[in-house]
Image 1 (cartoon, rainbow, N blue to C red):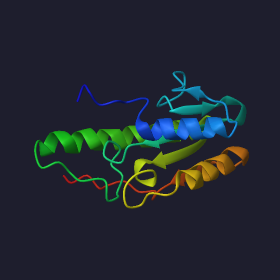
Image 2 (image 1 turned 180 degrees about the horizontal axis):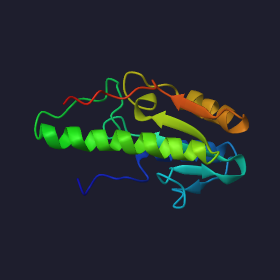
Image 3 (image 1 turned 45 degrees about the vertical axis):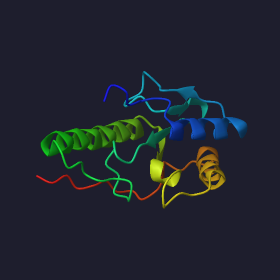
Image 4 (image 1 turned 60 degrees about the vertical axis):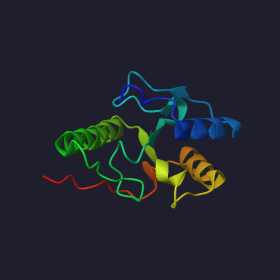
Length: 144
């Protein structure tokens, strides 16, 4: 697992470069904010979180429970989901607007054209919407 990136993933780079081309400027991995969001737009009081479907337990076709070390993976994914929820709530309580982009919106069967994803994020950034989710807004149920 040491080779798995937590930052600068391909989906994150696609979003970053696309928004930069559209003229949006941001800070990366806000170390002072809960959850260290991937992209921070201080002037707009908005953040964007780019989630990998497996690591964050997204209920989509790209997530499948591993067949080995089941207990480890259940605990790992459940912890990630709980940390995501807590971080999002803390950000919102601090007055930050939160957008989440799921990996399946950029890859796989549910993929949207990148331009559509970027357009939706640009609309979010220019609006006063408190929350935006690109992809279904549900995570897997962790079996006991």
